Structures are given as structure tokens and as C-alpha cells.
Image (cartoon, rainbow over all chains, first blue to last red; front, side, top):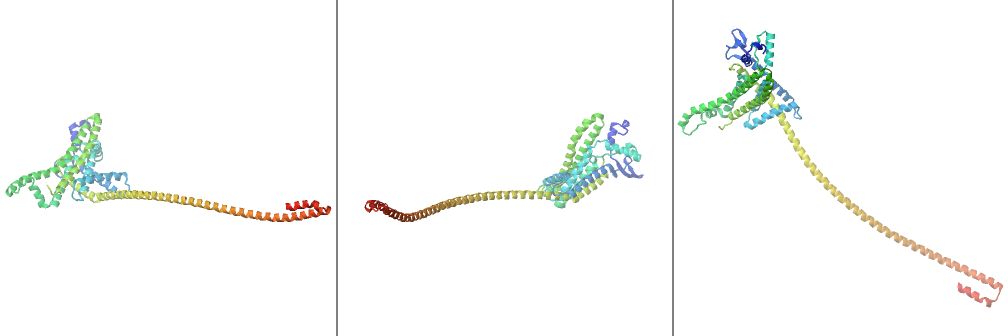
Length: 286
Length: 156
């Protein structure tokens, strides 16, 4: 809102919804608008910086607590951390019946990391982008309109897709490890239509494969798009509320309170579905 | 909102975070929680055991107290009986002693009286003789005084 007079509402919203980009062009390392032609090899540095920063914050907080953790009377923060850990451990124990050292830490990482990234949505939408614009304009002599800062990494489809892709790779990995390659292929081809009649079964295989592949691929897609969609929409409404002047204060409060529920719920749902998908991947019976 | 290289970066970050969490965060926290759970369970079991022990000890103490009371009552009973016996026998002995003393005293008194009587008799005889001599010296009328002498002799 640095030069609010010349901004139309749509360009203001557009500005808020654009990531800061870095890419390499013929002219060397370029930023933002210069990257519009760069294609795939563009990096959203704001997404990366915020998400990695929050991830390190999570690991640092939990690691320092773990190092100091006593088996005697725990401190308040240790209690809090242990509450989260036990909550995640209980969910994993209830849902995932195999034995795996990876599932529980994976679920904890997803839950806390996604929650922290979603939490950035509650920071008033204009503050950090405004500061970034000032810093960019004063310190680097950039055009304020060409400084972008999107502080909620989960409103970037790349972030949620990366998480979902990670889970998808693990799903396939677990399927192959538990059932073997043939077991996995059988699962994809012999269900849901199966018959003891061999020629008929061969005819049915393409249909089975199609259905099962769609079901398999739908899982990471739904994971990525659910989180992205919820947070993107929430962010969009914050931006719209932020654009309507003084009336925004009560509206903002109401939406923020509602959003507290959304960000925890989305983090929980992502964690739970990860556990469920991995549990399905590592169970033999279809 | 198009996919780009950020996806790869985030995927790597995700993998690194999960691995770090799996190696350095989850195990110490979980082991601390489990150890504390075990400690608490042990503590609860110990307190339950102590409770049971206390109950047994209380019951034992009650029983011992009852027994002690019983014994004390018995001892008191015996002592009372013994005291009554002692009093009885002493009383009896005292009675016997008194009778003995009284009997001895009476015997002594009797003997003394006999002795005194004998002595008195002799003195009276002497006195009577002396009296008689004096009377005889003044008036020798034996016939007239013979009744006096007779009377004296009869009195003795």
C-alpha cells in the first residue's frame, strides 16, 4: 500500500498474491518480473525462506526441549512439547498398525511445520510486505511495486505440492517394501474387478489399472490442493478485508478467529491423511 | 501459482526436516515420556503396596493392643487375689499373736497374784502373831480373848 493512490484493488490483490521470484537469465541472476520468461527454473525465495525458517524454528524448539528434557517433573514448555508429541504419537498408534520408525516423526514434522506455516496467515497481511517494500526501496533502490513478499508458504502450490509429493513417494516406497513389486503391481491390476476366469481377468486389467492409478494419484493431489485451497482462500479474504478501510477491524477479528480453527484443522487433516495413506500403503489386504 | 523449481527445494527441505526430526527430536522426547510413564507407574504401584502394608501393620497393632489389654487385666486380677490372700493370712497371724500375748500376760498376772497372795499371807500371819503377842502381854485372860484369836485364825 506504499503508493496506494495509483493502485487499483485488483492490482493490489495481485501484488499480494505474487511470490518473490529468483531465476537465472542471460543477464545473470534476475528477480521477479524479469523472471516471467524463466519457466520451470524459477525459485520462490519468499516461500523457501519462510518455510525453511519456520521448519528450523520448529526443529530448534523441539530439539532444545528434547536435549533438556528430564524424566522428572517437566517444565511448562516441555509439557507443551510433550503434549504435542503424545497427541501425534496417539494418532499414529491408533491409525498405523505396522512398525515404522519414520511415520511418527514424519507426522510430527508435518503437523507442526504446516501449522507454523499456516500460522503466518494470522499476521496482518500488509505488515511484512510493506516492510519488505520499504527495505527493498531504501536499501536496494528497487521499485516498491517490484518487491513481492508472500509470507504464508502454504498459499504457494509449490509448498503443498512438495509435501504431498514427499508423502506420495513414501506411499509408493512403503507399498513396494511391504508387498514387494509384484504385490504392488497385483494390487494395481487385480482390483477392484477380479475373477477366476483368466481371459476375462486379462480383459479387466486395463480397467483395474486405470481405476487404481486414478485412486492412487488422487491422494497426493487432494492433499496438496486441500491445503493450498484452504489457505489461499483464507489469505485472499484477509487481503480483501484489508482493502476496505476502517470497517476491516471487526471483520478482520471475526475472520481471524475463524481462521485459527482452519489453520489447526488443516495441519491436523494433512497429518492424519498422511498417516492413513501410509497405513493403507503398508497393509496387505485391499 | 504455476509449479516451478521451488517444488524441488521444498521437497529437499521436507526430507531433511523429517530425517532430522526422526534422528534427533523424536527419540529423546519419546524416551523421556516413556521413562516418566514407567516412573509414575512404579510410583503408583509402590504407594499401593505401602497402603496395603500400612493396613496390615494397623491390624497387627490393634491385635497386639487387644492382647496386651487382656494380659494387663489378667495381671491385675491376679494381684488383687494375691493381696486379698496376704491380708487374710496376716489378719489370722495377728489374731493368733494377740491371743498368745494375751494368754502369756494372763499367766504372768496369775503367777504374780499367787506370789503376792503367799507373801501377804505370811505377812498377815506375822502381823497376827505380833498382834496376838501384844494383846497377850496386856491381859492374859485367855479365856476371855480366846474368841478373838479364834476369829483371827478363822479370818486367815
